[in-house]
Image: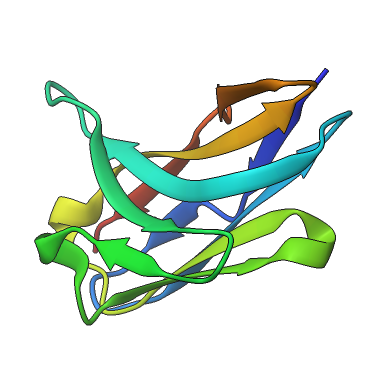
Length: 119
């Protein structure tokens, strides 16, 4: 069984930084694209950033220049470094990964971690 376990959320003041981590565990062949999504109250879940197995990245316009996604393939872990945080970044952040299990490419979600930006 594949699991994604997130960590690193919390409360931070505007302008501050947080680093989220998401580690995949279980039985699988390989991990393709990994990404971070967020969902604020009353809003739809949106893509924040994604990174392919080869290291190509893409970001939502709202976080470009402030957030950095990276991954450690040896540790099956993806990170999201969030700098210059704003109140509008407040949301539950979810990790997502496309993982090859046996002969199927499946999508998995983490449990979510709360990020609150407030003074």
